[in-house]
Image (tube, rainbow, N blue to C red):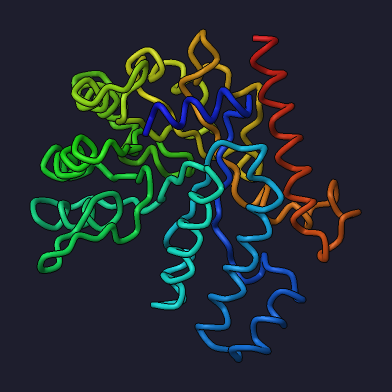
Length: 308
């Protein structure tokens, strides 16, 4: 699957992933009203609004981008109907040729970790039949429990040719409470990066590993170090836009070939119509606003890479 991601990035010339992380307050009133008219102000109504919102954004941006990243918590908060909307979103994005990164941040041990892996990127046996439950292409994994928590995911990746993005240095302000702690004089995130490179060496695509890393755009100097530690790992970079990251901050996450990283923007794209820069589109044309935001992000990153 890493080969498809790289192929999509080359084709679109946009190392961008759109985070499909819908909150109800991101969804224009007319979309909510239509859903509530059909299903009432219920969990089913909220899930329908999310699905219709996602579909419009995907329809307006799929030709510009290589991948999407739905964050499962935004769907789980609406219970089973929310998870149905998550699955519909995954399936629809794959129909459009997009790579789907399930942002699930799972991490456990043994059979529990294996069950997470099977449910999201693998196959499950039911009697004489086999099913692919959620069927994302990549998932995010928390490595805090060590190899016991990661190896079941790696095993499924090898079997299914799917991929992982393992949390290494996250973009949130308090990430340093644990991730920056020194161990024998080196920060923990560097040691995690080395493990990602080791796991990745066992799961190579043509040029890059199936096993990538999450490194926040808000820490560009750390990104420079981690790029050297994990030369064959794709880096998923959150924190662009709404969290303060800009194209000029991101150049060190990329290799000399212009590949090796994919940058996420969530509310900066899906709620673009709420921003002053895209207010001219109005809530009725929120999908067009998202398209314009993708085009601006692409230009920003491309310009930064050309000028590095």
